[in-house]
Amino acid sequence: MINNNYFKNNDYSKVAILIPAYNEGKYIKAVINKCINYNLDIIIINDGSTDNTNEILKEFKSENKIIVINHDINKGKGEALKTGFNYIINNNYSGVITIDADGQHDTNEIQNFLNEIKNNNPDLIIGSRFQNTKGMPFIRKFVNFFTSWIISSIAGKKIEDVQSGFRYINRDVLKNIKLETKNFDTEPELILKAGWLNYDIKNIPIKTIYYPGEIKSHVNPVIDTIKFFKLVFRSIGWKRKLLKELKNQKTLN
Image (tube, rainbow, N blue to C red):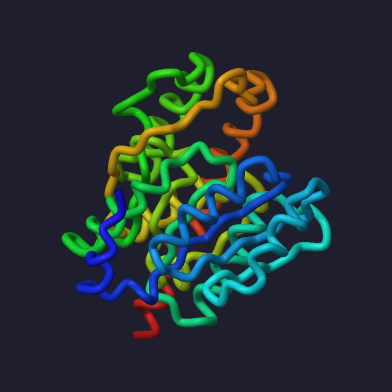
């Protein structure tokens, strides 16, 4: 249950909710309706959807706190996030909470992110599913654990669930990190670079909602393993480039 008085006593008007969406017509309406309860701006990136997502989003055109940005073609989740991040920066929001459009995140837990912002003001908050993995397919659980362990080691920060799309990112992180990837690797890229820049990263527990008959993994053990190690390899170059830029900045100062 959302306590509306919470928002009267604490100004979160400059925190937005960002929802990247591609062919999520089945669940996105319910996700938006639940997010509206927070009275925060909701930015939806419609990433070239070809199902009924477009028609559903048109139903919210009279809602002045809902901003819909359309990609003419599908560009990938990373590009959708970057479009949203640029909007956050250009419109002077203090930060953004990202949430997936497929209904697998509990919108009631947005308040937990806001509580963490109020109490500790971290730079980055990652929602972790690893305190409650009930119903999570084994292959997904294994891959998430393995990739989180590797990324944590490289980033120098403990990240419990590197693949979680339920996050808070403050404006400084978005301004100071240049993202180079375009798809699902954008989320771990942001974590790596935030770790190297010594940003304050917090993990908070979240649950994942699985719908009857839809508990399945989209993980391809071969293809996704190759993609992951390609990301790890690229991260070596990212780190060298970032450290060089920081060294040059210190020289100029």
